[in-house]
Amino acid sequence: MRYENEIKGKAKQMKGTAKTELGKLVADRDLESSGRTERAEGRVQETAGKAKRKIGEAVENLGEEIAG
Image 1 (tube, rainbow, N blue to C red):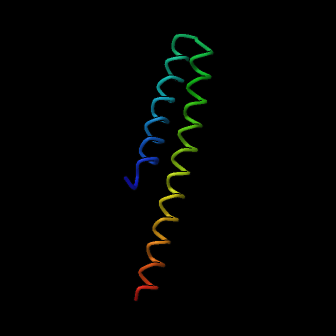
Image 2 (image 1 turned 180 degrees about the horizontal axis):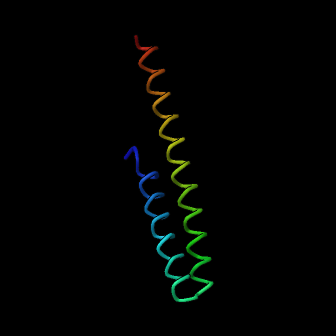
């Protein structure tokens, strides 16, 4: 699936945001910290997914140009 890492990264960010907010609500610093970490991991995964997709698209375009 072309957008798999982007979608999973976005989902991880949303889950992390929920954890962070819940941690703030119940005054659980560990949960809040875990949520921030998960959000950061999600951003990295989404960014890597975008880069991988763009590289794949560039390779496909190059192949099409070579094939004529």
